[in-house]
Figure 1 (cartoon, rainbow over the protein chains, first blue to last red):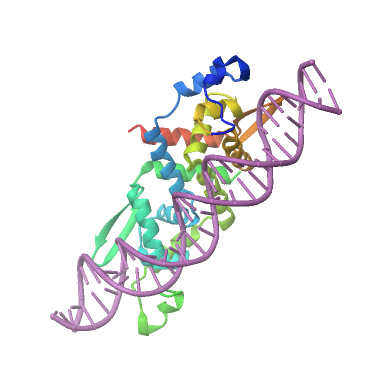
Figure 2: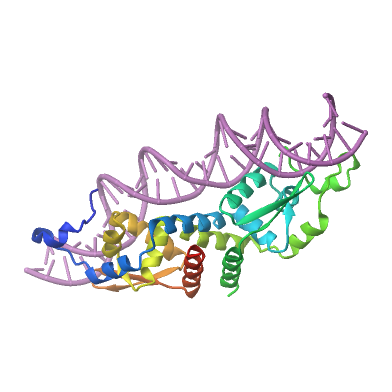
Length: 124
Length: 124
DNA sequence: TTCATTTATGAATATATGATCATATATGAT
DNA sequence: ATCATATATGATCATATATTCATAAATGAA
C-alpha cells in the first residue's frame, strides 16, 4: 500500500517519521475489539438512513404497523418492510402479530437513548 | 407508486384499509423536521463506518495526528484524511496546527455521549 | 377451498460511498 | 530559491445499499 507507514519505519533509520508512539500505544490500549466495532457501526448505520431514523422516531410514540408507517412516511409498504427487517435483524425493533397485522415497536432502551441524545443534539 | 396507499383511500369506500389514523396523527405530531432528520442521519452515518468509528474512539483518549491514526488503523494517510474531513465537516472533530502537523480531537460533547452509550450498549 | 388483505422477500437497478492513486497544498529546513 | 515532510483533494473504481417491481407467504373471511 503506497503512502502507508508500517511500524518498521520506526526502526529503519533511512526514513524515520515523526510519529507519536505514546499516543498510538494509548489508542491501542483503549481500542474496542473489532467485533464490537462492527456491531456498533451496524447500529449507527441503521440510524444513519432517513427512512429508518424516521421509523425509529415514530415508534418512540408507540407501536405501528407496516401500512401505518407506509402512509406516514409516504413510501411503499415494500420499502417499509425491507427497512423494518434491517432494524429487526439488529434487534432494534420487535413485532407482535394480531391477525394479519404486525405491530412494530422499539426493542431496546439504548436505541431510545441514542435517539434522545440525537434529538437533544439537534435542538441547540 | 404502485402498492402505496394515499390518504384518499380512507374516503374511497371501494378500497378501505385498516389503518390506524390515530397512530399516524400521533407520529405526525411528534415528527422531527426534515432538516433535523437529515442532520441527525449524517451524524449517525458518520459513526456508522468502522474506520470513522475507530477514529472517534481513538480520539476519546486524546488528540492524534493523521500519521498516528494511519499507523494505528493500518490504512493509508489519504484514507484517514478523507474520513477526517467528513467528520470535520459535521463538526464532530476539530484540529489545531503545530508546524506541519495537524492534531485532531473530538469537538462535541454529544459525540462522546453517543460513543459512550454505544460502548455501554455493547458491553451487556 | 377460494379470495382478500397484510406483510415478506428475491431480483434488478440506480445511486452512494470508501479506498486507492496521483497530485496539489502548506509548512519548515537548508 | 529548492527540497522534504505532513496533509488535503480530485478522479476513479469497486462495492454497498435503498428503492422498486413482481411474487410469495401468512392469516382471516366467505
